[in-house]
Image (cartoon, rainbow, N blue to C red; front, side, top):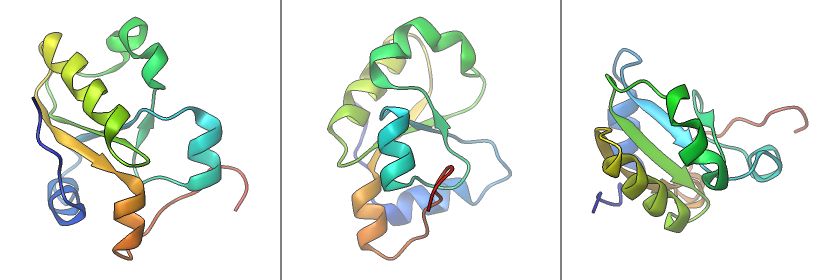
Length: 107
């Protein structure tokens, strides 16, 4: 089972050269309303299994959602399909620690 990452661990992983894929698995309305971490890709958990081909197999993945529950399920699914999953994260915890979020469309 993939590890639940702290906001600092997520930030450190994303500091690299774009090698880590941050996958937000909430539906697009939630992402628009609550914001997400810069550079994220959005594939809702309910669509993930059908859309696995959109993710690169050669890059490590961090999954994210509001608090980490759905992200954990997504991380397990990705591991079952051979992806290198660094862990899962919660965007709310990221925000609680004062880290920046981006909003699509409205602000």
